[in-house]
Structures are given as structure tokens and as C-alpha cells.
Image (cartoon, rainbow, N blue to C red):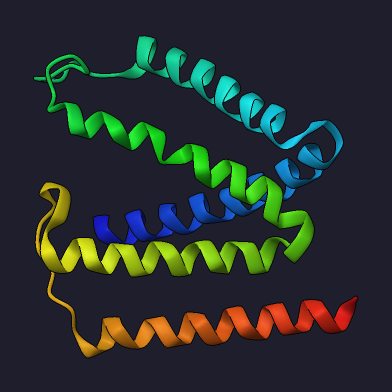
Length: 150
């Protein structure tokens, strides 16, 4: 049951990311990509700071004591936001989102398969590999329908 709840929450988070991409794409067109990205990170940092202050339970490690390579994860959101703010007005929210998911899935499978970044190993299977062409087809179909609609 807990796993199902986590999957549902991940779907909701994915929906929120698509909404964020659509809104930020429009904002980026009006005020600039970097200002839109700055706003996203500033508001996100402020909200997260409040959550940390009032809801975070004590942890055995701090940001100062974890392995330093783990702090690099904070950098990976920057290219995502900048690319999405730039891409959404040009290729549409659906195409940009499927492209991101294709990248996430591909890298996620590599991380799982090899246990990279201290993650548990989950071997590749034909079920997992079959998901890649499905997303490639979805991306091609969505992008093609975008081109016909213009």
C-alpha cells in the first residue's frame, strides 16, 4: 500500500512539474529565462526554509557532514528549469515533458542497473528496456501532432 501511495504522489508531482513548466515557459517569454528560473528557485528556497524550520525532524547527518558529492544534486535542478522555460514555448508542454521523462527514465535505469550514486542495484529487464521505445514513440507522436497543429 505504501508503494502505491508513493507512485500516486510521484504522478501528482509530475503533474505539478508540467504545470510549473507551462507557467514558467510563459513567464520566461515575458521577463526572460533566467529571471523566471531565479523566481522559481527563490520561492522554492523560501518555502523549503519554512518547512525545514517547522517540520523537519532531526537527522543523524547535516548538510555539512554528508559526503560532499551528494551536495551536487542541488545543481541538477538548474539546467532542468532553464531548459524547460526555454523549450516549452517552442515545442509545447507535452513534448518537453515527455522528453524530460525519457531522459529521466534512461538515466534512472542506468543508475538502478549499476547502483550508481550509492543507490540499490535493480537489474535491467526486458520490461524496463521496452519502456524506452514506448516513450520515444510517444515523444515522436506528440511532437508530430504539435507540428501539424501549427
